[in-house]
Length: 363
Image (cartoon, rainbow, N blue to C red; front, side, top):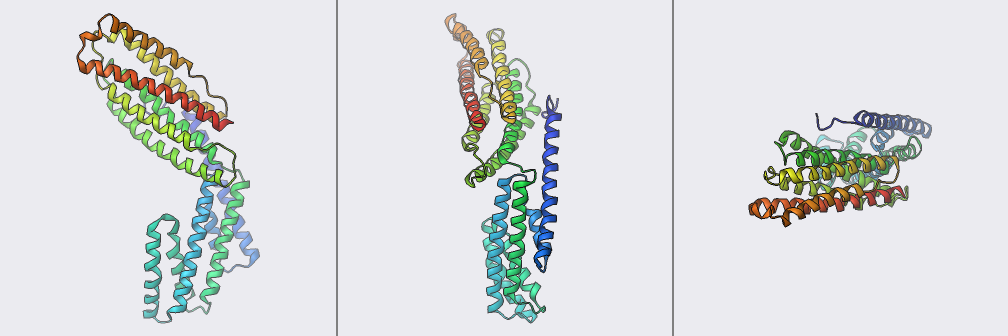
């Protein structure tokens, strides 16, 4: 079975497509709204307002806030510097224009290299210099028009993002967390199954790559959720504690992989294979249930089944210490068994913390 296959895949695809259609609707309304307002206001180049509305409208309000601030600040800086260069250097000739472009683009390109938020700055300066050449329009008026057009596009895009089918980063965070937990649950089962047979190395590697990609997505959405929270657009909990817990789960999974890198010794396999499998199944079921509860805004189910399964496993481990089974094993085998017991205990604690963090977002 593919790492992405399994129950609920169709529902996730429907949810994804619904989100894409909502974004498409917001972009369409924002572009039409920006064009209409720009035409009513009599701005000379309404297409700048339309393009800005297109670029600023993101999948979440938090993303739109970031795009809006980047676009407006970058335009303002580029416009001011373009005007300064235009006034300092006559550019009616080709040589003058080349010199003006050099002075405008050089410093602003360095500013743009400092961060993506400033990439629009040299573009704005270039448009001011080349766009006003030979038109009789002053650089000042062109800069003011450009800032007004960009500002209008930003305002309209934000208004649409807040009113028309608004996409909140908190809800996107729930979806991203659910999608992240699913391959972790699947990989945990595969790793434990490898103790009794040959592990599916290819599938495990694919899942590892997918988990890494999905964690990056969770972190990106969490940044947008935090931005919405700082802007007082939501009363949702701080996403950072949840993200820290999700990162720990990936670390725990790496430790499980190290502890399950070989088959169990024949003398202990019949006694602890089933208990370990039961622990992994309880943990996987909890992760899937926690993700579903996050999406639905419902309480996370208790983690007691994990504790019960761990108790059975620990009881069997203690029995093997008492009857001398472990003393007959090599130091390496004993070390792996105790390392696995330790990491499963750590994973159980982190899963309990995960439930608490998700419940914070429900409150």
